[in-house]
Image (cartoon, rainbow, N blue to C red):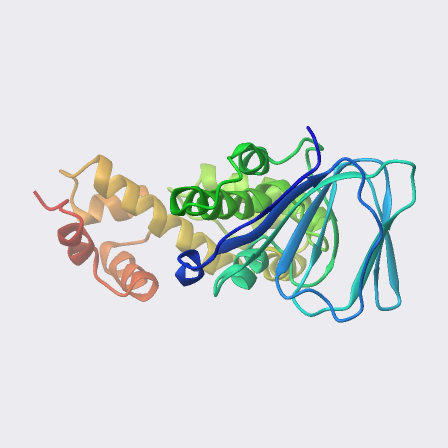
Length: 273
């Protein structure tokens, strides 16, 4: 692929929650210094070679399989430190841009490593689009940009929680397999050989809920699936299949987590026939 840069027209897309402003690919990225920062968010994916990103007093060496982000108006610079430094990038903005990055675990200018070193699939599609600036192409760019930021959620291991998420995963799998019955905290802690107190702290740091709250959320999600798959079942049967002590407690938890009673949920989704 030859070096390219597309300046996206934003006359129409600026009203969208997320829109692209520039898209490009460099066979060799030259030194770039921005003492006043850049007005948009930027995502750069390194394909080969190495470079250095400088943000304030911090310096990051960035190579293949890594991406680096710059947030609007944050002073920074980046420069190649190998003979060739190949990368693709996209600049973007919109009222949901920061929220989408935060959802993927990106909250500041910096560097992250991808699970897969290949160019992100939506990024490939963005670079294949014609460089025309008509509305259809710019809408397609916004759509692919949205898909790419969603993909980051799967492709970026959480920087601080990765090890703890790996550790707690067997507990989450155990919960998923045994939602139909009582799940004492002691039993869950024994799955990964920790104390119940430590397991509670681990839950708070990783899934940001207490174990009982997390379990109830999973039970309610399972109950929704069962109400769709088995419309003939009574609420007390759904409650039993999802591990609730009785239908009254099931209805109370359902209302607390969804804002409506199970019967209202069924009516809303046409499941009461």
